[in-house]
Image 1 (cartoon, rainbow, N blue to C red):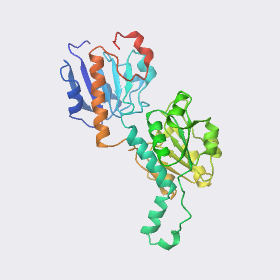
Image 2: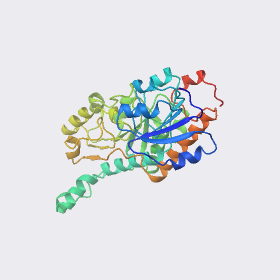
Image 3: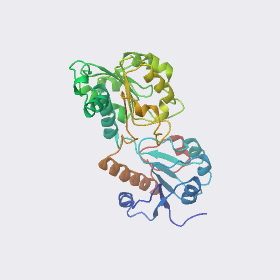
Length: 332
């Protein structure tokens, strides 16, 4: 069913006033609505006539895409787009965009915080201090130095580069594994590009900054963990399934690595009986690495701007599935 004016639909667990998105779309003749959704059926009903879908965290699968009658663009708030069936969207001629780079500073800050907290064993020391075991743990020699140590960064997009810049400022040696970026970035960021196995073997800390794709699913598995130093720490602020969580738990229990700092998990929300939560050498946070008031405002504003571009017949700044562009008449 055709509409006389475009419909922009925001879907999430709760409705939003969309002030920043509306400001970006001011002057464009369109209807903008926010719909609280809690099931696949509710999502389909909300978006079936949408021209643009603004999506916080809701899954958009093939069955939903098949129901879309007018959709030109799906915008995934934030970096990750693993909740959207990109292949189905491409087949349907729908552009998928994410707000890449919007929270690079927040996520890299969080990853660095997890790295430093792991290196300085803050969870264990806090537990010891608050339980009256001051003298039992006090020592000048038990904690990592950080300066001069080696961090391996997997994925050198916006977040990985921000992480490298901050680790270099701490005097760390930075190794990078990313087959999709040019060698010129190694010179620009003063890092060394190395194969996966070499990064795992040499790094004192391994920090993950890749999307969850078929090629990155369980990128860190038991074989990868076996290559890491027994004194090394793993930091994951990317996506949970990038790490084989059961293999990680087994490696931690066996002392194959020193510890981990984790913000994302294979199953979210994290079960209260997950063994990671009871380990003194594991710091867990609830998928909040990208969270900040300023970062969220940037995401919302840029989402509105991307929607405006497409409604005005222009190409969005970021396109996850560029192969669909040849089937659309959009200006650069």
